[in-house]
Length: 57
Image (cartoon, rainbow, N blue to C red; front, side, top):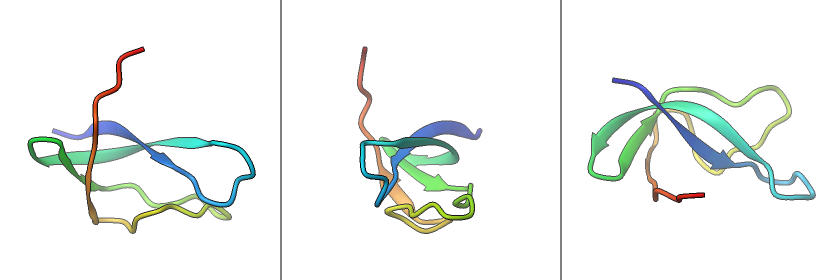
C-alpha cells in the first residue's frame, strides 16, 4: 500500500522537503514511486529504495 515519505531537496538554498509517494519494502525501507518535478534535484532516483526514520513533532 503506497504511503507518503519526505525527501530533502538538493540545491535549494534552504532546507526544503518534498512529500513523495513510496511503497513499503521492509521495516523502515521504502521504494520511491514518484519522480522529481522539473528543476528539482532529489538525493535518490525513482524506484530506488531508501531508509526512513519516523520523526514525531
